[in-house]
Image 1 (cartoon, one colour):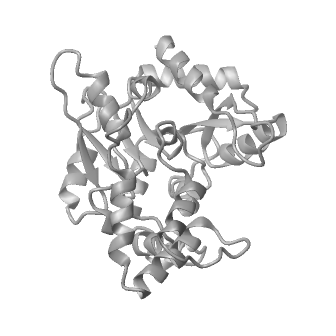
Image 2: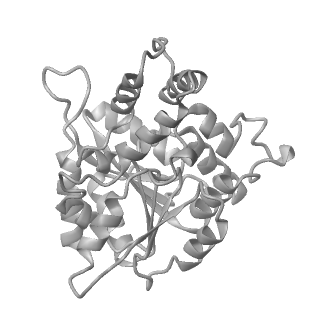
Length: 311
């Protein structure tokens, strides 16, 4: 059954009112305050020194490996980690969040998870919920050897729990050596994602802490993806595994706030996500004129403010 966008939006509003959703944030919202998206980050990394030419068709994590390996071979790997720490640390000369981020964290979520390395969400929470006094939000790094902190985070997820912790799935700026950025980093955390390797007979579906945590989040909770491209091969594969494990059909379990620049784009994205059990809620993101890439994502801000006003 085809669900129109307004109906999908109303379903999301009803679900948010129940305070049972988990917010999953990608890089999009952080770009609003100057943190880089993939191509921007790679361009900045390439300035660390003479970098290898980017082969045609290579994906961003694989190209990041080429840059990192070259620095390592030159005995300059510390410069790589120093760059990541400085690039994603709080910015002293500008705001680290906007009213949009404050609105986003006010959407009645039971918890917040992100793949970002910055603390935009933490500073927004401190601002949004500090009206009655000091409010601290801690950062939990899944890439640190402290799994008990992740356990405490997962156990704390509840409609009645305040935002005292945010889980960083791919690390954060204070632990640059643990950040998941390159292809090798992903393999270290997740392993190979081939069909045979991820089958039940292989016994490897849940053999890393990252796989276990993602599986738990996707199977126990309903996630709302914001600023997330939904092209992450691991997340898409884990969505399929959860569907298979519990014999789920295409009935939506999760939500994703997604951009579209054309009706064809919307139809294609909707078809893809619905098959994964994800119901998209769209906002219009027209392409910039006289630009080969990039879209106007101000519609995301308007949609989030509208959702807040509807609760």
